[in-house]
Length: 209
Image (cartoon, rainbow, N blue to C red):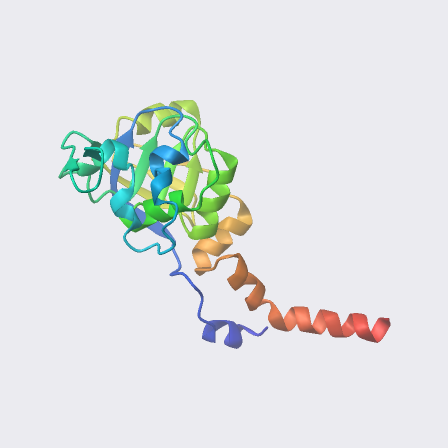
């Protein structure tokens, strides 16, 4: 496909080269997907509004939605971090059952980047597919970032760096995932962008058959 045709194509996401914003820190290990979005909300198929239920067992008091009250001590309810775009969590983030609702809820709340010293593979893959950037850092970097609650952090996907007011360090991202974030694509968008090349390849196979 020519560059001209690619430029005319509309993809499902906005390109993301950099995410800047306040970090919220949840220094708890083994945050599983049921804690991110409890099972009772898995029947919801509309992503819009799902962020209201993000970490609902921690964000609210009460046994039902009708009698629940906001927990003012939970980090995402505090004035300085309730608009956080970056979540720094304890080790082994996203473990447990596979549920795409977990990245949906984080994104709908406004979180665009999650950072930990390890992230469960299925959660990581679901995040990338939906436009949530999962970043794994080493132990020293992780311990430092856990001290950055309510601080400004800049994540540069193009340069693959995380920067605070005091430090900057590199992170690794799978090349295809990086390409998709920078170009506003998901996996299906990428396949559609290659439609002409695929058609030409198939035509060649027919000729040689």
